[in-house]
Structures are given as C-alpha cells and as structure tokens.
Figure (tube, rainbow, N blue to C red):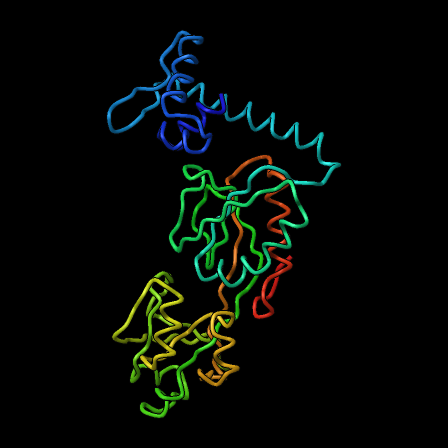
Length: 294
C-alpha cells in the first residue's frame, strides 16, 4: 500500500526504487501483485508516464487515509518517548542552509541519535510530495495552498556597498537616489527590482536598475564585494564583511523590509514528531539578525 502511494505521488517506479532501495522490477512486481490481489487495474502505464485509473484514484485516496491514520496511531502510542527516529528529509535555500542550518545541525543530530538527516539545498521550489521531502525552509511569502506553513522568523536586511564603489560613485542618501546607481538585483524575490524601504514616512518604493542580476544570494554577496554596485541583502549573509570594513551599510534611516522565514510541510492531519522537533530546533538556533517568531 505504501509503495503504491509513493508510485502515485512520484509518478515513477524508478524514484520509488531509489527511495526504498528496491530494484525497479521489484517495485513493479509489488504493484502488479497488488492489482492481481484486488482484481482490478490501478495504473495505466506507458513508456513516458503513469496515470491512475478511476479505480486507482479511489484506492489511492483510501491508501492515504489509512496510512496517515496508522502513522498517527503509532506516533500517539510512542509520543511518550519523545525521541524522533528514521530519516528526516529537509529542503533549504543554498546560502541559508549553509550559514544558518548546517552550523547547528550537529547539535540536533546529537540530541536525537536515532535520527538521520537528508539535506537538500536548492534555491528553487521543490514538490514536497514528489521529492519525498518532510519539511522545507523558505524565505519570503509562501504561495502554495497545499502546504502548512509556520512563520519562524523575520530576517533583517540591509543596503550595502563596497567602500571602493562609494568612493567612485558617491553615497545615496535616500531611496530615490538609487536610480542613479548600479544596483544588484536578486531575481528570486517577487519584487525583483522594486525595492521597499521603511522610512520616516512609511514604506517607500524605489525602482532600481543595474547591469547585474542573479538568482544566487552568494553571487550578490560576491558582486557587491567586488564593487559592482549596491545591494539589499540579508544581514546574516554579509555581517562579517561589514564588521571587517569590506562593506558599508548605507541608507541607515531607510530599512529594507524584513524577509519572512517559513517552515512548511505537506498538508496532513498528523505532523510527524521529527518535523515538529526540527522546526523548533531551527527556530531556536537562528542567527541574532533573524528575529524568531514563536
């Protein structure tokens, strides 16, 4: 039943084979045996894709309910132990994972010796069900209605430039001055080149331009260090560079709007203990530049 569920959710025998460490023919035989036992075809197979039959869709919905109820029952019985076990598959953005998650992960594993972590670092959205991900950490608003999202923090952002750039181009004093500067655009933000600042008169918007844009926070960091322009970036990404004098915080009276940090997981009636423990761990180990939300 669980193998059938994962075949449906991943759309692939080979993906389930990798997850379970069975061979692909073994997974296929499991499904064939299930169909023979039920006396009905559950999946239409082609060389390119798998499609549920009408009976298969009905059976899949029953499988989800039964397996989730079983997991909830087992968790309820074992809750007194308070010790998560198994493998926790986590997805994080690359830079955030490198600087905010990895440095503290050993503490989490040390606290729960029966737990394993499979960490996926990717700046693009992942399909949690298809990829078998238990929990995802993401920056900014969560758009998916199929996920349960918990806001775990607000990430402070700053406007920075290198001393060399400012010596050559001058220092802007207000957001409107940015139109005369090269600005480094992070393309994964929904606002892209529309930068928002909290000033004395409320939120101010500045439409910026520049010769460099990227989907990588690390690339933004390297570009601003190289004197290529002005950037708005999370404080945790460049705090050491500011302390060393390699970057200067500018527009101090105009704070870029903070970026929300969310933990999200599939919409289920039951949330595994390992997911709850991990979210609590991340919330309590965030950098001081990220304000935790409880």
